[in-house]
Length: 248
Picture 1 (cartoon, rainbow, N blue to C red):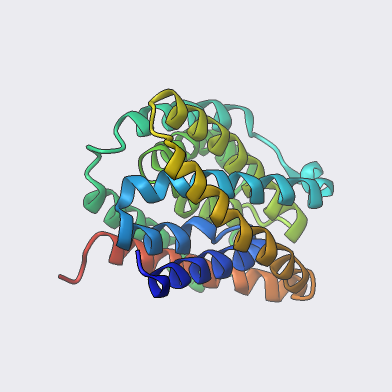
Picture 2 (cartoon, rainbow, N blue to C red):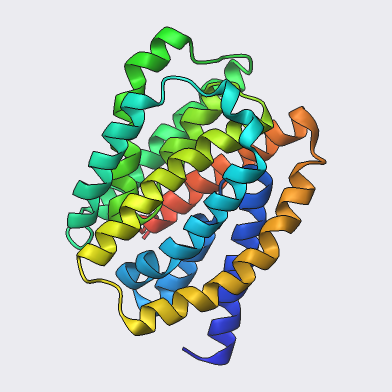
């Protein structure tokens, strides 16, 4: 990797970390594809897993007061952890193109629904029914690609939470999936000294940019935060389509 390519990757990590600080989502969305351009998908997923774990820890502590809004997480978490294990095993064999296109279609469908029904919220009963399916899907995606945000962010936004509640919800899910993911990566022997060094380097722009995003997010207001999350979902859908290699 040349110096220019390294700067590009570090910039993508910093921007992704700032977006994550503001909205709870964003680091793997930008950092993993940027790094994968130069070192491959598997390498990128393994390297970004540790910095992403650090951001989730910080956001969990900062938004701890939002825990009172969280409900029906038990089945979602259990199903998600099982999905992470399966997805990590399938890391090199999962049909990523088809999976990415399906996820992009789901996110786009949700955005279209929110455009037509901006006040639509997921009911408590529907949440209990959907939570294990959301958990399994997001865990599988986390294990296979290192990015579970398309499912987790869409689901949490549908719940209609405050900023603290939303960021805490996505952070607690990302953290649980992230810990399981890192343990599965380590158990699979995918961490090497070079990959650990790269993860340590990636931590520098991550931890510098995250508080900047948190500061900006605190000044958005409820409506501004809602629009910011919807913007991230649009970016997620677009990145999934590009990730699938379409249009080719």
